[in-house]
Amino acid sequence: MITGRCECARVGFQIDGEINDYSHCHCSQCRRLHGAAFATFAGVERSVFSYTTGESDITYYASSKSHTRLFCKHCGSNILVALTSEPDALYVAMGVIDNNPKLTPGYHIFMGSKAPWYDFDNGGEQYDTFPAESLI
View: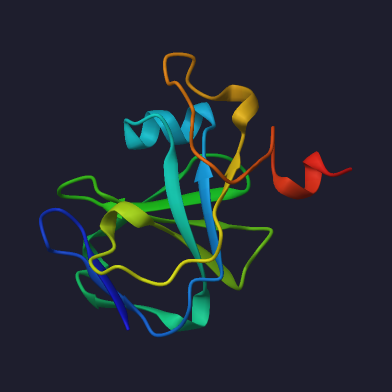
């Protein structure tokens, strides 16, 4: 069981399943929303994710036509991203996960728009956009 919570602990969740995708997004939107050089996400099946507390304390932000971001309306912690193109998946922000879950090999997306002030020396596959788009 994987658990997590927001900073103020009003919102809690659990994942009763495996992380099947592990990525680091370097796009400018993720950098602004997370206030960091990149945002790290754990991809899980929607069916294994559930709130344990504070679901009514979640608010939403449609950051694009395809991305809805969920965060705590009290402390602002980013909880997850839902993509319209993947209705059965959720991408949970790794920063709100409590334990040390088993992870698949990580990869980096949107390296073409990475922060110019960040010296990148992390391993893993790297893509200028989404992996599928980079392989076309």
